[in-house]
Image (tube, rainbow, N blue to C red):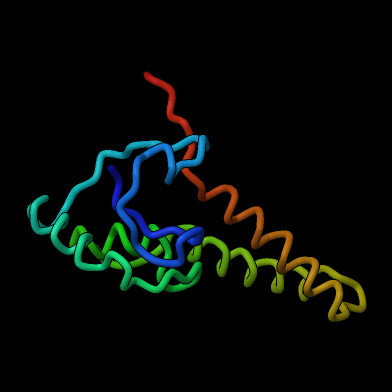
Length: 126
């Protein structure tokens, strides 16, 4: 069983691994907790049906970090906002006669690339 916050549910639920992952690649990571595992599990269970999922402020990474006592943040959200800012800056610096459409295109393209580059990847054995 897995306790997770998903956009699919809009909240935290405890479900079988295959239901949560829906056949998509999932990767276990070596995580360090700032609190004991039993406390993290208790915190996670306390949010079942209560956590309000939001891609920007309360996503699955936010939930996992919160439940394990870590600093609540999301690498994909940070990468996306940084990418959008970089795209706006690049258009401002290099586009001749920049217009709204060019700014939007640059922001979306670099933001999407940044989010994709921050996603978990399969790590090969050394």
